[in-house]
Image (tube, rainbow, N blue to C red; front, side):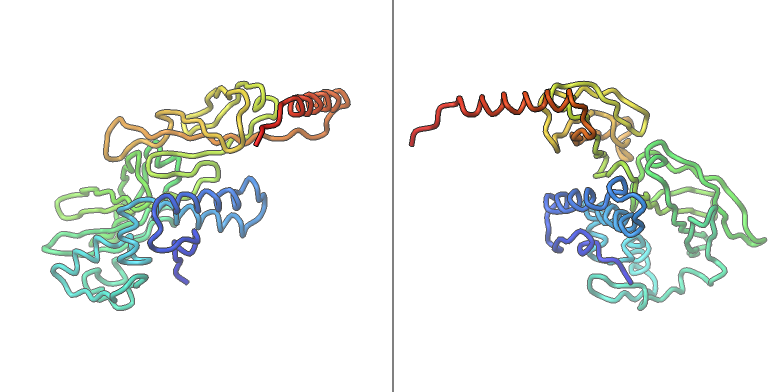
Length: 303
């Protein structure tokens, strides 16, 4: 059954980016794998939430989804076909390829295979040139650093294998063009798989980090994982749950602006201590008493 991204996030079709972001963050926290260890349903839901957010938080992808529904990744093919070839599209949102004429895409023998089962696509030939579309799944780490893949292309003698480069900064919906030779043009259609630790919005990344109770109150240094490695983060005194710290330039590289990078936003999650020693309980009891005394000492506001 087709997935409705708006229903996944629980927002209306006319929701603005603020509403989408708010709904996504609430659901991502609820179904995060770290909070639901071993729960396959929660893991599946988390992936659906991330996929929906990646599409709806990007204005270009959202516009394609609103027009073509579950076939939004093939929008370019549909538009090109509609401009000069027999292609029938069922009007309205949430459409499908059921009413399309696939004469341009060749026979079933033109289907493209790929390494590890993550590639799938089709070939169409126009004016003697072969256009091959291949679906490629990459991890967030691969989207961050760039990646290489082996792709099997159909040829007159069977198949030939080529290595392609996926540039850093790609996102779900990106379309990478590879000129194989004068007769063959390859188009990689990218899907970035959800990550258990990082959420992506454009070129920015978001992550939650547990902070020891004492560091949240008094301040301290903690380790934070980024896609490049660990960083030492200074936690300010009296940090609150949900407080964000921006790490400039620690997000995703920009596909459109060479050298530019997004930011990493770290959300602090203070962790209450367990299994307290007697001395710790006594100190906390004194702390509680001091706080109570300070509150009672404050004069009441007159009406």
